[in-house]
Image 1: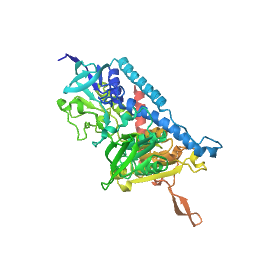
Image 2: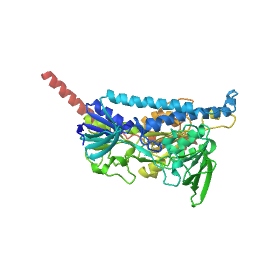
Image 3: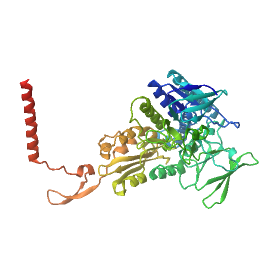
Image 4: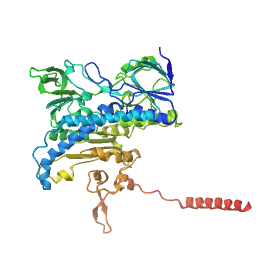
Length: 540
């Protein structure tokens, strides 16, 4: 066996979270090593390791957002065909086709540059890099088979597991004919006709991107709606309306059963409905499975570290990212926190190193008010609790809501009828109407959410929102101009009943009367104290 290399901190996984945690630890002077598989593939050419930067940089947020931009660009051109005449323009009736090869080439180069920057930053931070497959030998010892076949043993009193997740694929006949969301970024050309299977944000985003880029996209999902988990019903209903009006073809109540290649070379997707009846959908150039993701824990041999996982394979952690084994920590998609978001992993990683190496014993991330965005068409933004979650936590009587549904000015002005609707919702709690949930769907929802996330985290109330002067005309101003506390009948000076605006709840409570005796006694006590201090000063 090789000799053991000693470190203060072993980080398994060089994704966004692992990298942030390792760099912060190194800033405190810790001796750190990062173990990452690098960009690996199996015998069939399918990805098994994303590469430096993890899922986000290589097969997630970054390349997806580039494709979202491209898709949105074409959608804007298509939309302009319908809206431009209202603004006095004559435009072509077609947006044209995307040069997929050129787009992919530029996108992949951009990602490769980011890969290189990760390695450079680690080297600058004096972090050792080991490229290979890691597995535990014990709670503090890790065995690595490097990419060139060399065996390494590493030991540290503190170990972080940040290996992320990987796409889940259904166990159905013909599944080898399908690709995952990872495989989407390997497509060499745009599929003319594509099936996307799934109901979560990845499926919705992928279907929207492909549809926007000109593919005949079909979205298959088991329930009656997409985005059923974790999103407010108001947003889900609005999204379904927009998908039906402007998005891919929808196939609700469809569970994938099998795939086969027809004689014409195209792929046929067989689905079953809620009654178990099979339906064939033929002619697909590509079938993309986006049914969810699973933690990438299997290769780690966690049992040798004494660490168990949940039924789903996720690692259970406490509020300080600690596992059930002393000295072993975990962050990111591999954990059971439920937040598979890059900024969450980064924040959790930095706070973990602040606590372990920076003498900040209480440093931790707060999960309650994390904002998230879905790059659907149109995009969705959400912060805090949905209305059902809020009612469950605080009770029906404590919760009220404010909603708005409208076409923003750019679409409302269009005389041709092409409109993309916006939806906004506040979930309010208690008589002070604290904002415990904020949800939006529509153009620019992704960009306007960050500031509201700060406000919600700070405990802002509806009064705080409406005390802000609106920026007009914008979509975001609707969040601070809901108003509408209603009216009530009052008797005026002439003894006549008339309607007057109802005061908002935070102004309805009358101040308690002041007790004059208490004011007198308090003032006298302060006077005596000041006099005593002056006398004491003079005596010196």
